[in-house]
Each structure stands twice: as C-alpha cells, then as structure tokens.
Amino acid sequence: MFRILPVFWLAIAVAVAAQGSEACEGVWRKKLLLIENFTVSPDEGVLCVPMSWSVALEMQLYLLTSLILFADRIGKACEWPPTRVVMALCAFLCVACCGARLAALPDVVAPNGSFWWYTETQYRCAPYFAGVAVAALLSEQGASSGLPDSVAASVSPTAAVLHGVLTALAWAVLAFVMYFGSSGPLVGVESPMQLYPFGFQAAQLQFVLGRPLVGAAASYLLWKILAGHSPQLQAVLAAPLWRPFARLSYSAYLMQVLGFALSFWLLAPFGSAGSPVAQVASAFSQTSKVLLLYAWVVLYILFAFAVAVPSYACIEHPGTALGRKLALTAVRRSAEGHGELAKPLV
Image 1 (tube, one colour):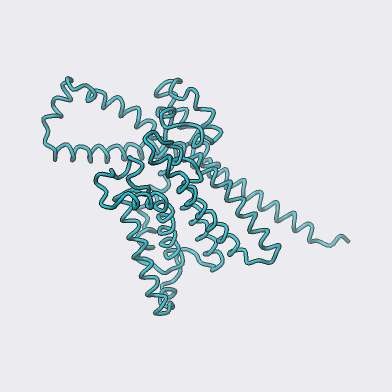
Image 2 (tube, helix red, strand yellow; image 1 turned 45 degrees about the vertical axis):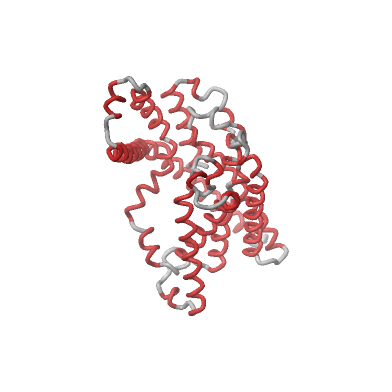
C-alpha cells in the first residue's frame, strides 16, 4: 500500500496537470476508491490514467489474500495441513475464475457485448492465486531463491522426466499466448479471428482457459526456479541487469500519462492526411514504416523509464521505506508484548 497508492495518486495529479481537470472529471472518485475496474468503462477513463484499473484490481487481490491467510489460521486451529488448505482454496478460486470466464462467453461474442470481463477481478484472478499457491508450497518445503544445484541433482529419473514434460508444456503455453493473446481472437483486440488457424470452438476454449493456463504455466516455472530445479533460468532472472528495471517498473507503468500527453501532441499532425508531415510519411516504404514504428516503441519505453526515475526517488522509494519501517515497528512491539506476557506475574 505504501508503495502503490502514493504513485497512483501522483499519476492522477499528473494527468490533471497535463490534460486539464476535465480529463478525470466523473471518474477520479472511483479511481481513488479503487473500484474503477468495475465502474469505469475504457471510454470514460481514456484520458485519466486509463491503465490504472489494474491498480484497483491488484489491491482487491491483496485484500482477498488476507482472507486466504485467515483460512490458513483456521486450518491450523482445526489441525489441518495449512499449506493444503491454502492450495485447495487457491485451486478453487482458479476454477471459479474459469467458470466466470465461461459464463461471460455470451457477452464476449455478442456484437455489442460487455467489456467488463476484461477488467473485473473475477475474470483475471487465476494467475494471481496460482502464484499464491506456489508461495504456500515453497513455504512448506522451506525453499528459497538460490538453493544449491544439488537440489536438481537429487531428483529421481521419473520426476526428472515429468519435470521435463511439464516444462515443455509450460513454455508451449506461453509461446502460444505470446502469438495469439491470452484471451484469443473473440475479444477483437488480440488475434483477429480471420487469421486464427483454429475453429470457433477452439477460440471459445482459449478465452475460457487461456489466462488461467498462463498463470499455471508461469507459476510452475516460478516454482522450478525458486525450488532450485532450474539454475540456468534462475541465473538469467537473478542477473543484476534487471534490478533497475524492476525497481522502476511500477512508476514507469503509471507515469505513462506523460507519455500519452506527449504522444497526442507529437502524433497530432499525422491525423490529417493533408498535413505536410502525413504526406512525407505516406511516401515511406512499408518496411520503413515498420522500422519507424519499432523505433517509436523503443523511444516510448525509454521515456517512460526516464520519467519514472524522479517518481521512484521522490515518492515510491520513500513510501516503501516508510511502510517497511512501520511494519517492522509493529512486529517488534508485538514481540515485546508477547515477551511481557511470557514473564512470570510474581
């Protein structure tokens, strides 16, 4: 919360400063209440940090996680294996997500169907709860990042074959959705149906299972890394090169509001076919246009990370440090309180 909310509020303030108060008029309250993924349509919030619906979704999932931890406490009180309780609850929630996506199919394929299936929590929660299940499993196993290579060497031949098959399936799922999208061609924004090489029923099946399968595949690979069964992939992902990008990623995500405002200004001349800029661009070959598009993407990403630096240094990092300090203080006081109760009364 101390990391997420301050940058989120900053992004809304920047959107208002860059595009005027009318940009967030009618939606800012819903955004601040973290309910916009249920109440703000893409058309309504297009100028006011349009991607912030995912922040509301993330916070809602964090609240649901507290209920899972409460179920863990209940399991311990009933002398049930707590890890199995958490994993069973996560599995149930993943299946419920698939059921919600199945129930949403009529709206998705309708000509004027609802778009809420894309942003609402019940349709997107499966990957998150798959990750929670992995965390519970690792906690039971006492696993941590950086286990020795001997862990992988101790796996039996049968288990090694099974891991090999599951790893191949996981990468196949990720490769498939990288090309066709996690929800498939039915949504109209990922892979067009006319270019989809499979039938309509396959497209429906992909919509229902695509995102949950992405969560399952990514969670399995994550478990392999953290349990020490994939030292090569762990070495790649643990490289120091990624750390600055990881730290800046959240601020870069939300500070795109500056990139949006700048893009509207820079691309405005291309909106008129008769403008000199548009006439010059129309003379470019198709290959040149594609290369320019890729160059634009690279420059846009670099700009997003550049404006993320002051956001991280002045808002995000201090907020995270404050939250960590308050949490440690609360834990210390709780421990001291238990210590006082443990002392004899006389």
